[in-house]
Length: 490
Image (tube, rainbow, N blue to C red):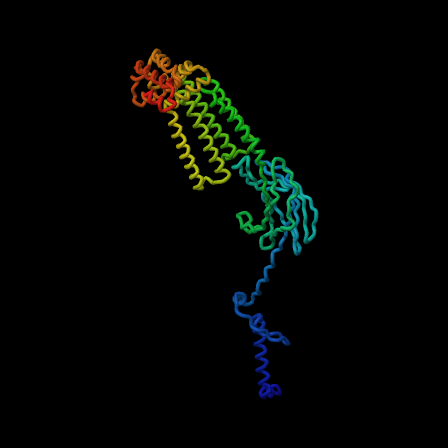
């Protein structure tokens, strides 16, 4: 009864209402966590409301009763220091072996580095330092790399050391210590080592094997063959063989068998030298600069062999003038083919790419220049200049105008217009023009007869004797020394 009186009283009713509100508020607090914008703890100053943004929007999407995810820690950064002590060996077929000191420094505990040599393996590993924040190793690495021999024997190779970490990219990453990375006194026989190095730290994209990004560190240097060694070991022997064979161009058709032997020996020497060069290189799917250099030499020598065979066949058929024409054309065609091909070979390897329009412009220019040279030389291959050249050559050998003219007529006897003349008629031409101061004047008469396609003038011996006598008379009549002598002569 006393309890009912208290409840029915005014103070009891107020107490009941306050208790009910407190119970309901406590239930609300237990059911929903207090946010950063909620009620401040007792005794603390109320905090100002933060501006709405992505963080607050993300927090507002968290379902009721679920605690927010903890913040992701920053990845551990390992600063890498590399000292390339030496390159023990390098072979284009098997790769290279490097003696390397590796140092790793972390601002916090490095943990397990999980090092993996991506382009090779560590044949030996010596631990120099192992602390939570500092680790150092000396390794002998057997590595392979992509070798480009297009410019051999003047090639430049990039030797690379690639390190991976088996740890995920969001936990671990590499960084480059530019001040501590350097290259030692590398003594690699047969190669020049560039002291400039390149290092980079990156996050390789996820692959099918790991399915996640991979922390990667890459260190590389360039090595190249000495230019002087490449010239003396590869180019000079090829040039020497070509020069020996080209001496066949000096030997005329009269020594046609010696000419053939010289080119044949040069052909065999070039083939054997190229085979020995190929044995020193790994199997390749492309031609190197040295391969193309020797192939161009071989092409020039083949032209010499073919021309020698054609000269031999021309002599056997009695066409000596044709043999000399083949010999003289080969003296121009062979150097043109060699120079134009070797220049393009040099440009494609050392300066221009095959798809570069400038290279094709150079090729067209060389073709036009070669055509112009051949056109100019074809004018010298007419009967008149060839006859005079042959006469001068035989005169130097025989020192007798009569014998030189006999040999020259014998060379061109199978060519028009002399091919219709008999032996007696050829001897008559020799006897008529041999006494002249310049017996090669016969070349003018032969050129006119060839142009007119009429050999009857060569058979008119009386007219030819009068013409020769007229030339001798002009030669023997002295020139007047003054006006009185000129009038008297008139």
